Length: 254
Ligand code: G3P
Ligand code: MG
Image 1: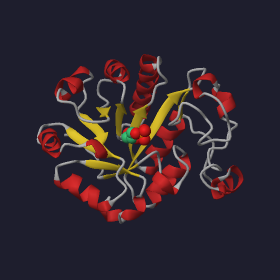
Image 2 (image 1 turned 30 degrees about the vertical axis):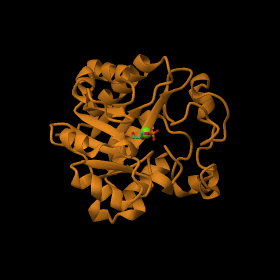
Image 3 (image 1 turned 90 degrees about the vertical axis):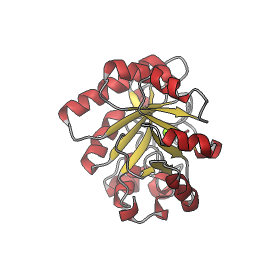
Image 4 (image 1 turned 45 degrees about the horizontal axis):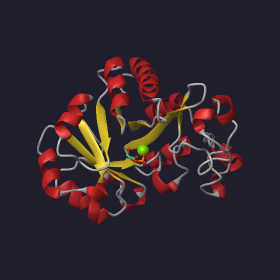
């Protein structure tokens, strides 16, 4: 079974910070959280950065498609102000946090320095599954070679992306993301050599969930923002939950 922290900060720092930012990771660590999840996509020039959406509007000061914007253009954007003015670029810099869109490399470095377990969600633009899996796995493997204590699990909704990571960096554990667990879950996991399954807490059949949890597969559920739901999932054998609400748990419970 893979090692998981019980509570994983969703998109960096959950709802407490701008999503997929280094500031979020700093806040998660300060809250006592031991692990974070973040999304990785490629820019137009193939640089992996932290971004959930295919477009820039919702979370940054930019506009347009991530896959059509270069890393140099994205580096000029503010990734904090849309969340709250307190996170807009200037005060954030005074705090010592970086509120630009982080590169994947910067996220690896920050999480390692903070001692945070990482779930790298590979989020390819349609058509770039193999390339994104390849780039993420290569950089993660190089990081692990120089930081052997870094704790990494790669996940994706794309089996093709995970298959690439399996070829490039076979020792990095993989988790398949699935909106709801299919009857053929074992063969879906086998296809990409995944040792874990990450699934939506809203779509669960508890008898099936218990069967998966009783196998050698680690199960983690997203996005759980109520303690009662988390407790029910843990009782069923779920190893970890992704949450936006780190404030619901005390440091020792995470
Ligand atoms: O990796 C778990 C969760 O982050 C998947 O959903 O859309 O928030 O990336 P999403
Ligand atoms: Mg995600």
